[in-house]
Amino acid sequence: MATGTLSIDLDALVSNWRALNEMSAPGTETGAVIKADGYGLGVARVAMALARVGVRRFFVATAEEGAAVREVLGREPRIHVFSGHMAGDTDMIGDLDLIPMLNSIEQLTRHFEALPGAAFGIQLDTGMNRLGLEPAEWAAVAPLALGQGPALIMSHLASADEPESPQNADQLRVFREMTDEAGVPRSLSATGGILLGADYHFDVTRPGIGLYGGRPFADARPVARLALPVVQARTVTPGEAVGYNATWMAPEERLIATVSGGYADGLLRSLSNAGALYADGVACPLVGRVSMDLITVDITALGYVPGSLDILCPEQTVDDLADAAGTIGYEVLTSLGARYRRSSIGGSLS
Image (cartoon, rainbow, N blue to C red):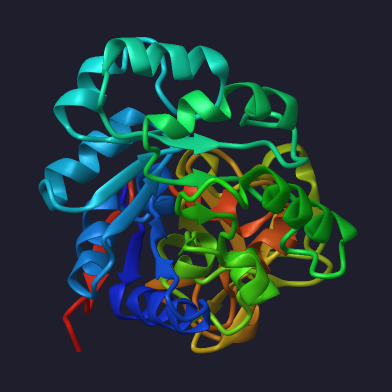
């Protein structure tokens, strides 16, 4: 079966980074989060495009992801690992000069004993209750940890995509209380935090979803376009059902295209009877259930059978598709399957 084509606009990616870099306060370094295989778009192409325009600090989720970035970019960039120093990661962290963002007393002990003198960072919990040392823990170990010279101290905002949330100011206050005397580079803001303003920027910002065209960066250029081939088209008569369990019935004669792509390719099953695909700017409703490999689309409004239909395109961004699926753009991007042919657009220094 033919697969879809996922086009990645590296010029748009770079443009988004440059815009967020401009928003970061003077003197603040703008890094880039490229975890989850570059948010599903391919970490090699994403990392190389960003490195070419000056990014020197990258953030990944795991040591294995860090190893993939190091292989692509060589020894120069700083690569921070959000999961810290996990058991079994010692050789990889040491051999590849990764910077684990240590998030517990257990990890501090592991790192200092296994890799004395090796680079590290610290994660603090300022109210998200996910990863990081809590204030009392940090107070107990700060003299020891700071004495070892951490490369970065960070925390993570839980509600940065909601600018009016009082949690943002609360976390900023706690972060300052925990770090103002540390004398170490600090990072608090991902994309949403950058948009909150300079008070949240500190020494390093680390945009993620905004690089890839997603909210809350409303001015981001779309980075991903996904075209799915039409396998077959047929006319259905009034009252005929389409797809599993007859969840959609034709109210009148309709032209239905069967399209290659399904939940095995990251087209979420919650898109069943929701959302649309596009051809020549015309919206074509997705009808019936999303199945593993196929979806069915009402193309009556087109008046012809196209060779393919777009599900990510200028008319439907990752966030539009996420809204239709009842999720967020992050899940849409990182769910994109391995069967798509991925191709890059642009990526030069222009």
